[in-house]
Image (tube, rainbow, N blue to C red; front, side):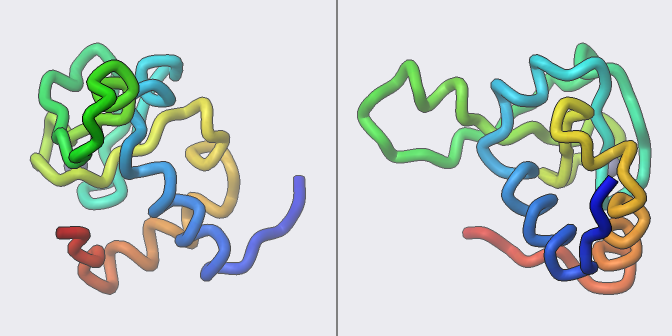
Length: 104
Ligand SMILES: [Zn+2]
């Protein structure tokens, strides 16, 4: 397992927490970076559509998962490997001590 710096881990997590519908649906479980909850991906009922692309098909696949526990768009799927990695602790630490950057 390669060692990641906090900055790398956080950048990776941020990338995987947006437009991640396809990735999350292909995962066994998902985790939230805001409330630290881990849950079954079936629990995710809300998705945020943040794409203006006219290609509707791709767009739906790229919706952003909304956490079923705290309602924040900071969910990452287990298929990213980030939830098992020790980098997850660095990521959580970062997100819990700083507010996640608004992407709007
Ligand atoms: Zn949450």
